[in-house]
Amino acid sequence: MNRLANRYRNILDFALSSLFRRKGKNLSLLAIYTLIVFALASLMLFVSAMKREAAVILKGAPSMVVQKMAVGRHDLIPLRYAAEIGAIRGVGEVMPRLWGYYYDSLIGANYTFMVSASLADYPEDIIIGNGIARLRNLAEGDIMPFNAPDKSPILFNVRRVMSHESELAAADLILISEKGFRTLFNFPTGYATDLALTISNPKEVAIIAAKIADRFPDTRPIPRSEILRTYDSIFDWRGGMMIVMLSSAVFSFIIFAWDKATGLSAEERKEIGILKSIGWETSDVLLLKFWEGVVISLSAFLMGVIIAYCHVFFFSASLFEHALKGWAVLYPRFRLVPAIDPYELAILFFLTVVPYTTSTIIPSWRAATADPDTAMRS
Amino acid sequence: MIELSHVTKTFNVGRSSIFTAVEDVSLVIHSGRLTILKGPSGSGKTTLMTLIGCMARPTSGRIWLRGFDQSYTGDLGTPEEVETSGLPERFLTEIRRRTFGFIFQQFNLVRGITVLENVMLPAYPSGESHGAFRRRALELLEMFDISRHAASRVDWLSGGEMQRVAIARALINDPGIIIADEPTAHLDTKLSREFMEIIGSFKSSGKTILIASHDPIVFESPLADTVVEMRDGRITGTAGIP
Image 1 (cartoon, rainbow over the protein chains, first blue to last red):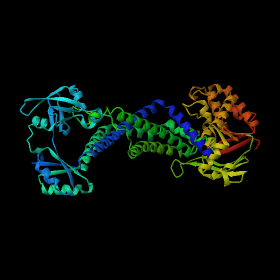
Image 2 (cartoon, rainbow over the protein chains, first blue to last red; image 1 turned 90 degrees about the vertical axis):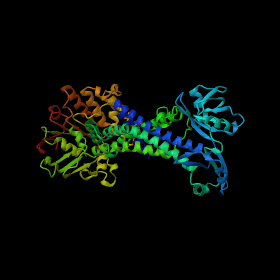
Image 3 (cartoon, helix red, strand yellow; image 1 turned 45 degrees about the vertical axis):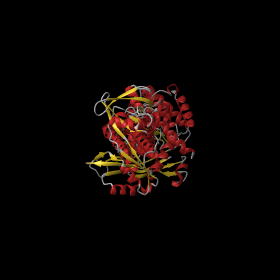
Image 4 (cartoon, rainbow over the protein chains, first blue to last red; image 1 turned 60 degrees about the vertical axis):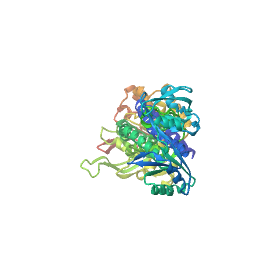
């Protein structure tokens, strides 16, 4: 047992000094390899963290949202629908919601307006998201002007700026009273933007959705699971797009690594012959080449993943944010909650470490199975 | 003792380029003696030494190894005798590592690593502790007066120094038999005589030595016990102690 451990340790020792003597070549390989792992791991960590974040936010979302449709588009929903939907068995609370978008031509950004019951007594006040405050340089107590549809100016007092923690969900959000909302958008009375439903038994969601669709054919019930799926698809799509962009770099690396790994130089071939002639077995040579491959690929994997972890969770994926977070003027600034999915990490490991290590062994195996007397004749 | 019986080695069997390098060689190499294989280039000396040193297998004929420590070969033969010509690769490797020390014509040192690492190379896969064989390697470097170069890369050494590193490497596993192929081909007269002095010390320590050479400094040396002359793959004459 001790001899076996010694043999592994000694050959690893030689593998390290063997790698070290081709410093330039191996360090450049390690750098490119690390960069590829970093890019892929950043994408992977970011996309899964965003999906997890969206899932956490949507946990507090209503069980179902009912929208009215007109010519295939979202329309305002009459408030009388709320009473009738509320009468369906299994539906708990029906909450009419008032929300909409406002385009600020001054900075070219879209804001999301949402009515908050907490502002019912303050029709001239608004609470703004951190992103808006940053972009418009606003603070508590400032006045924020808007234009009504007839271009008449309406002024609101900034009552409060939302906390930094809520920025992922609320960077572009403005909370407003119902009165202020209806005045600003000239919103008709007796209508809401949509209805938020509370359904206590999640198993009944699909049945209730079917009943609503049946009784109100001009509506579209959207269960929470569907919203979550949409978020997932958006982040998967953005991640996929980044992978397509990165694929040229990945393929160049694969060709480079394949060439490095599979082709043995005349010098390496001669070395294998020398090792065999002085008493190394084929398996010893393979172990040496295995260690060399493992040292390069495992180091690149670990360094790439650690740098990606810092990049995503400490620097908010600053290199990829424009592609991954969206294309809005109003980028949310936030820190994702650090988390690693071992399954995804294992996939990345098998896609990076295993192919490289294997591809270094095969050509060495071919050279190592040759008769050692070639070294005598070189 | 090494005994060869009707050994033949043919390359490229079944092809138009078929070539017989060693033909019907029978020979006895006695323990503790210096045997020289003498002959021109292409006479089959190197091939014969690769067969004796378990680097290749003969196409026909048999080779026995007698009187050396063969405990590691398990039940392949009696402790006193093992037939190497028919052994599987892993046993041949084990015998090669423990019984033979090789000194090559071109030295065959691994470039880019240090002198010390080169000397230790044959011991790495043996499973021995690194500290133990490192100590031994340093002693050998001391013995051959090159310990000052231990941490230097072999690329920076002179021909004579490289030769001594190659000899130290051949001795790291304390083999019973030393095989040297044209060891003086790249050395001047002074260094060649120094090499023969080292061989003399091996001989007096009881090692069996086999040298292939066409250098008169080697085959005319008074240290040589037997000189076997080869031409076209065959033995054409034997001088000295038979």
